[in-house]
Structure formats: structure tokens, C-alpha cells
Length: 636
Image 1 (cartoon, rainbow, N blue to C red):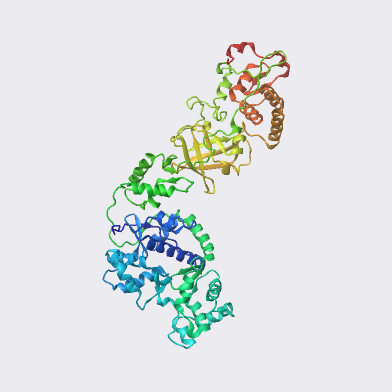
Image 2 (image 1 turned 135 degrees about the vertical axis):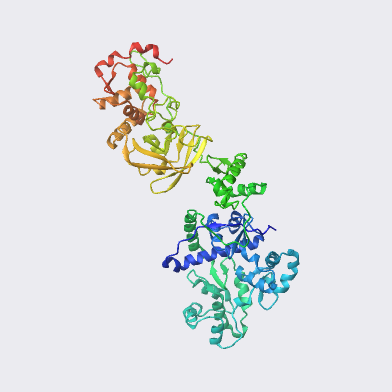
């Protein structure tokens, strides 16, 4: 049995509900049923438990660990934190109270017939004696006049839940059972013609269903049975029959029944609350039943690590270390040792890569749960293998030259980070970064190209190394858009790509050349995505021009076309010339092509020449072919 030293828990003071919210019967019922589920699970477990274990035992996907914790934190009269676990506050009742009175309160709080084994366990908790002692005492107490048996004596409920028929007058039965004539009249049509003798369950089910998704008082159901059967009415037998239908009838505290199909609206409430509860920060200390001991640094046990491993089972998303400390190990963020505990847990998880996949900062995943496309360069970003192109005179086209053959402006242009791309980039120390575009910058200006927008990727060639966390090789981060929506993105240093941007690209109008910004936040694992319909003049392509390029792409794909001919065709369109970046952009719309090959063709053929930072094509000089002065620069 866990040591009963209560821990201090904190909770944010909830805002006062609006009158509409306070009166919403579905929300009220959702809260009540959630508390009932939490209480019953702790009774079944028989000892204090951590939130993930409680949630797993409940087994309802709509009930999250943060929601369960929040419910217990805000109901200190029912639940208490004990040794990083949660317990039922009722287990700390006065040991001097009569055992029968204590047992009555235990059954009332359970709200349904309590199994004998659980009754013994709860008494053992309260009175601090061995469970075996109460395995003999509990059955004797439950056979007293305040209780009644169900399931052939395997569980017991309270007589107060049943209809009191100690008087024969109907008015008196209503009065002593707190029922009204108006309520009886309202539900009487539901059971008109019901055969309470031959099929009492059908009549009872009809009444419960008539509650419209709200609980139905057991004594109202039994009143109609008593009215129909008279002296043959057996309240215990009817309750026992309904209790046996636990798959379709849920017994609630205060002698009420709820149809199981009424849980679905409650799940909608739980999901909505679960999405909000994570935003509530600890603020106000909850009640405690014993002084809190001074905070001690976390000492991880094998049991702790097994619980954390179990928490990851079936979970496809990353989880932060603070969330593990709070959700699994029950350590409040307000604890003085929380930062130290986070370091301790991070080191322990990183030391077990077979169990926990580190994805950067304080985040971990279950092994083999990264999206399957991580680690691969999409085919649309690869450079196709091309045949050897020759002129009619046997001269080789598309010759690759060394950088020394390039004009000075071209040498600069190919080192522009916007010109670079996946599998076609410079080391960071050779890239000519614009002013302010540094690893420690608060905000980066980035330019999106069509082939990345199409598949939701972005090249690390435009992002200084160190702007994102630099290890491990695959880092998972959160990206928030202007509306605050969060998206997981993945930085893969092995293939030099960022994946997972498809959704944030959706609102960008330009297919090529959109400018957006990435901003740091206070959280090293979270960044902001900002865009304001700005475009980069070197990379922007209008819709009309994009259509022309896609038509040209189809033409090129239908038969081999040299890169020389693609460049010539594009420059035919730009009579006054085009910048290297514009030319690079449009060539890559037609066919993925390395920037150095484009620069080599521009430098190597006399028909191409620069004019005021623009490249032009002179058809009259095309017959002159390759510049023989550049022969020594050909890459063999």
C-alpha cells in the first residue's frame, strides 16, 4: 500500500461559468459521469494510481489524461494526490467512525452496487488494517438493513436507492420517495400498456430512454412497477435485473440510470474540454489533507520508465518531457525541482534509444512512428539522368564548367541561398547570406519555389545551420500559423529538407516566389509561420507564365531536349534579358536542373551574354557555338 503522504497540487482558478454554461444539463452530466468513472476505476484498482493508468483503465478515447487530471485537481473533496499518484479522498476518513456508517458512504460515493472484494479493500484503506480482516467483516456489515444484494450476493447497493413502499397510499409513496404527481403524469404514457410482470426490463428501458439522454430516477421507474404489480412488486429483484444490463444501462450515484447510448454527447463535451484544458496553467493550490513534504529531485525507477514506455504505446505523436513529468510521473510544473527533473528524465530517455526516439529539444516518440516519407528525397526534387546532347557538327552541348569560368556576377549568384536547393547547395560557410540572415536571427526571410509548395517541403539550403536545433539528425518541431493552429514539421539534416509544411502553404496564393518568414518563439521547439502575400521578383512566376512553363515541360518530357535549348527558349521570351535567379526558376519549372549547369551554359556559349545583371540570347551569335577560351574549364 502506498505511503499516505499527500502532495501539494496546483490548479488554475477556473473562470466563473456563464449562466448558459452553468445551466447546460449535458455539460453538468458530462462532469458528473467523468468523476464517477474516475472514482470507480480507483476503487477497482484498489490503490493510488497515476493518471495514465487511470485513463487506460477507463478505456474511453474521449477522456484524455490532462482532462482526467484537471477533474481530480478541481474536486479535492473526492480526490487527492498521494506520492505522485491519485487517490480517493474518502479513503482518508476518520478511523474512529463506525464501520457500517463508513461503508454506507463508500457505497453511496460509488453510486452502483459495490462488489464485496472492493468493499473489503476500501474499509482496509480507511481503517489501516489488513484487507484479509475486512474480507470477513464486510460481508457481515453488508447483510445489514441499510444494504441490499445483487448478482447473487456478489455486490451490494443501498436500500435508500429503492422505492419505499412501507405505506399503501399512492400519495404517501410519492411523498416519502420525493416524487411528484406531475412527474408521474408526464412519464405515464411511456409505460401505458407495459407488462411489468412478464417483461419488466422492457418497461424500465422505455422509461430510461424517455429521459432524453438525462438520468432517470430509479424510484420513479420502481413506482410504475409498484403501481402495476401491487403486493407482487419486488424492488430488489427489479434493480438486480437492471443492474445485470450494465452494457446498456449505467448506474449513477443518487439512484439514477443512464442509457449507454447517452454517453456519445458526453464524449463530445469531454473532447472539447480536453482541447482546452492544456491551456490552463497551474496557479492556485488545491486543498491537501496533510502538509506537503519539501520537493525532492526526481529519482527515476524502472517502474517509472516502464510506465512511460506504456504511455507511448499506440501513440503516434511526439510527447515533451514536461508533459511526461506531469501526465505520467505526476510532478506539478510548479515544483521547485521541475527543471532539474526534466533534465534527469531527458538523459534517461536518451540513454534508451530502443525504447524512446529522441526528436530534438525535449521531445520523444515511440520507435518507428515517424512519418514514412522522412529520410527520403521526393522524386520531384531529384535531377533526372539525361542522355548526351550533341549539335549537328558533333559538338557536345550542356558542358559543365568549373566556377573559375564564370563571370563575377554569376559566381555571386550561384552562392545566393535562394538559388540553392536540396542536392544542389553549398556548405554554409560558402553561402552568401543576406544581411541579418544568420543562425541566431529572430526572424528569417524565405522564398518558396513551386516544386516545394506542391509537396509541402522546404530546403535547408535557405536556412542557416543553427536556426533550428542542430541535433539529432531528425528534429520534430511545432509550427504555428497566424491563427495559432499548430502543425508538426520535421527537419531532416541527412537529406537537407524540412517536411510537413503542406497545410501552412495552403493559404499562399503564388505558386512560385512567395515570401514567408519563420520566427523563433520562447519555446525552442516552436516557431511561427508568417506570410503577407509578398513575392520575390526573381522567383515569382505569374499564373499565365506558369501555364506556359508547364506546357513546355510536357513538350520536354515527350522527347529529349538539351538544357541549352531550354535556356534559349526561355530567353527568347525575355527580349530584354532575365536575371540568373529568374532563369534558374523557370528552367526548374521545366526540368530539375543544377544551378551550376545553367551557369556553365550561360558562360560557355557565345550566344549568351550579360547586360545590366540580366542574361540575354543573341541568335546571330549562335553559330559561333562554344567559347573556345573556356575549354580548359570543362569538368571532365
